[in-house]
Amino acid sequence: MPLKSSAYALALSERRWLRYFAFFYLYVMQGIPAGFGLYTLANYLTAHQISPAAVGVFAATVGLPWSFQFIWGPIIDKYQQSSMGRRRPWVLLAQTLALLASLGLLVVDDPIRELSSLQLAFFVHSVFASVQDASVDALAISVIPENERGRLTAVMRGGFLGGISLGSAGLAVVLHAYGFHAAVWTQSLVLLSLTVLTFFIKERPEQALFSLKQIPFVQASLPSARGLFRELFRGLTEKRSLRLFIPILLYYGCQAVFSRAYSVHLIQRLGWSDADVSVLQGTLGTLVVIAVVLLGGIIADRMGAQRLMGRVMLGAGLFLLTFNLLHIYWHELAVGRMGLVALSMMDPSFSVASMPVLMALCRKSVEGSQFTAYMAMVNLTDITGAYVSGQAQMSIPAPVLGAVCGIIILVAALLVWFPYPWTRWQTKIASPKTGNEV
Image 1 (spheres, rainbow, N blue to C red):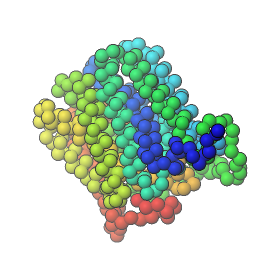
Image 2 (cartoon, rainbow, N blue to C red):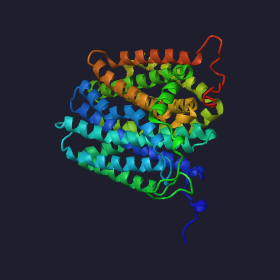
Image 3 (tube, one colour):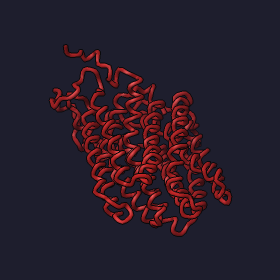
Image 4 (cartoon, rainbow, N blue to C red):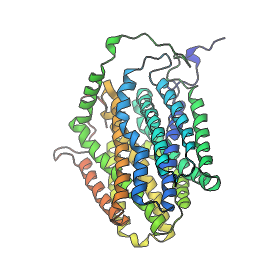
């Protein structure tokens, strides 16, 4: 007997626990390859005396396709008539292509000697991974109720950072013990198992599990591509959007600059092994991420995301400034480890506050596209930070870079705390376009 749609257990719209579980593992899928490329392999290249500039170019190449997510957002918003759901077909397609691209990394035999081939293979994978990220972002903003956004965005970011930790620590161990191909196979098998799981999860219970049919729709209800981009541009350039988003970009950019510089400093200046750095980033990083996202998501929902965001920026700026002024103690093992753990906290603690703020700024007509565009620019900032860090390290010591980054974050925090002399930043103001509060 066929199962009634209303009785289907794995529907995101009907099960809160499923939303938490699904969006956690969907972002873990994106984090594992990122951790493998941007941490494990970047540290591996650094340990083999590849210059910081070359490693920075590699990291920028790996991450570059993620900065073009804004292209995929309007396309995903435009074509959403499948009987399998509005977003789910895009997620499944992107996951399958990303899996095939992961297997494509096997064409590289020696990452050190074939650096150009490694960059190209990761670039191809990142193209499909960026489509996957855009489609999952669109799915999230479509099915997550507003009263769950703080906690669920924390879980999403935690899943991504947890995936990075697994890709960094787990695949670093496999890489050093069994070689590059074994690490690629391990990554691909994990992605395969999670892709299969996605095939059994629906957006809504009445939708088909698998079907090539399209649902009836009214053509006029679908805006033109020009209209989508015009509405998207308006949403991104509103004064309130710019006032909050520019400080967010400054934070992520500074974090990327110093995180990369600190890892290189530990490996090439203080003699740490790349495996030790990668494993420490992954193991302690995972525990810290889980604790931070669970606590931070609850605080964001109760305190208010914008208020929490300002406080996190202030704390991070003061930490970077103080930690880099005390750089003479970095050779101490406990201090070096503390720096890695603290840096692993900077992204999740900030993301649990900034992601709900960005969701609230999105216009209803292009919410998926606008949120994806925000994420694309965050990714571009992260990529730019990695590249700038590699170039700057050729002449500027890591402690100086870190201190400058701390000052910039403190200035950005002031922009969030005191946006106008007549407006208190703590007040929750509903956006006139979205009606959402931040």
